[in-house]
Length: 293
Image (cartoon, rainbow, N blue to C red; front, side, top):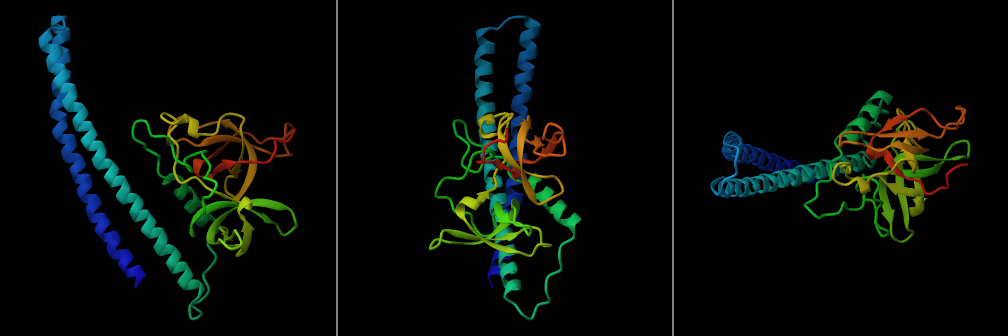
């Protein structure tokens, strides 16, 4: 029943989103005339080679209108982004509910292991669709935006992706990409599933062994302080794997769609680091361990 109600709510939200997109286009078309007037006024001023009181007053009025138009369009776009966020949240809740139903339904056949290539594609899509933090003027990026860690009392929700420190088969410890199943406030421990279904393992871990992944990308053009900086030590997901390795930031993103360039610790290279590798913001978190000398 919960899945049905989620489906109907998603359908409502998609209809509302469609209306907001139409409003955005209408608002943009309406403001286009004013922008053309601004351009023509500047052209006349250049032709006459002077700024008369008339043009000064006219431009002030035109720019005031343009600013109001831009703010109106911005408000509509923010509403649309909120709808998209709610749709994504409902889809995630539906996925988790279906997963739980599958786990406890003995009549269902066991789920097939996901092919490696499919998993890698899904991880790339997750990184690409991570929302960009767009604050209002004066807003500071929140926790879990880019390099900003979660607050001390933060508890990751079921379905959230995390970096989890687990013991490997050989006894060594490693950081893996995992999904939160549950959290016990009584024991202060998480239950997490290895994202790589080939492992099919569930781990019970203390909070210090779990690092929540970013929930927003930081915009390098407006919030560079929310990004890891050059030579900062991090844990980065090694390309085409589901494991995090210690790495140094070679270069932070320059544009919102850019990845980090990182140097992963690798003893097979003379200087102990790999050549630069591209890793999405989604899969780079702080490393609290000391840097190797």
